Length: 274
Image 1 (cartoon, rainbow, N blue to C red):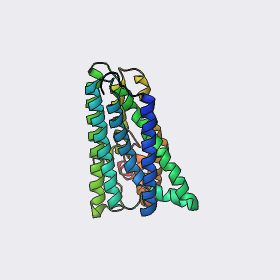
Image 2: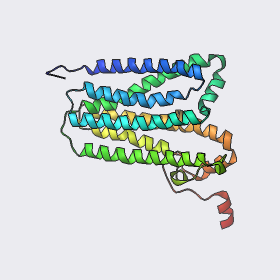
Image 3: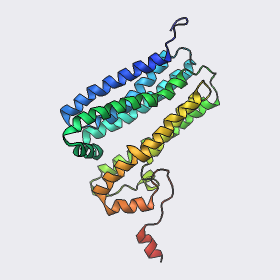
Image 4: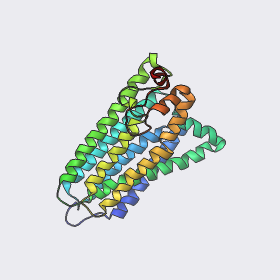
């Protein structure tokens, strides 16, 4: 943008919310037509990436190098996550979480799903705000930014590895109905969620040296709450217990729910030791 033609950040937030709300309304119609509510998970991540790009373009007062890096990293993250979820959408039945929700909601399911989709639109905007703060940061590139790139690379690599290990396990017909304990899944019941959470701290590092940078920690703290208390681990484990029963209960007993940690001995191993 030439001269002093700066975009008001509140205007960018308003436009971002309108875009996310419209996108989710359209996708609500798509899921109503095809019967798979899981498409919202594809759109949520993609929406965050597109909002990050929009915020980077509109924040002319921020350091150009930082704006480019933040937008690029957010887009790569969103395309990887959304692409993986879209592949699952095409190759697997509807996520059990959404099947349960629709069953519990009965005849009001579609109306409540519309509201749920709009909540996801608001969440996309809220989780993209650290990228807006980072993009408006005009301070010189420093060690916090370099650490942000390194942190992002480590977190995304861990998440991609966990997803790949689980996909390989599920694709093996000999493991059908079993609990995945391969690779990272030996040390955490949800390593993908753990590395996803770590990833959000990278944007805090990009925002740290700018005005209001400290507020960006709301994103990883909010993500931690959602993953561990609301939309992540609780419904995923409820569905796993229904489908795998005692095998998953044993997995819960021996393996950390979130932070990777050496597993405890199984009951069978404990009995043999005694």
